[in-house]
Image 1 (cartoon, rainbow, N blue to C red):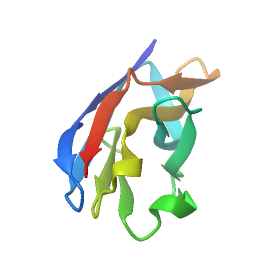
Image 2: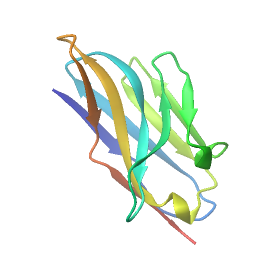
Image 3: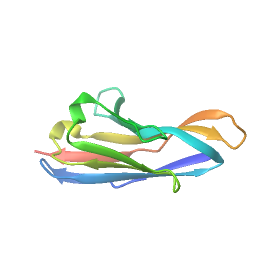
Image 4: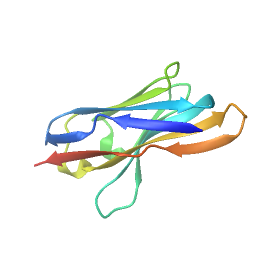
Length: 120
């Protein structure tokens, strides 16, 4: 019913930057919270940053001041600008959306993930 497609991952040197994008499509009435989680190798998935439909952002302490989340509600897009990347930012990054479907049913969706690798 809803698809989230991420793009923008890759390999970057420490100190570099990347921007991730996620596009939502499908039977969407409204997207409430939308954001990014990541799963480092051998660890559990963790919150990176989320943004409400009204534009209020929430960041993990580990990324504050380095990552910026933004949204285009009309186009159903969410972005994650990452600067000053560190090797510990290496992870699979997942897009997440809290969606109200056109049927008015609430659902949470995940993207397929995009790999970000930061070399030292």
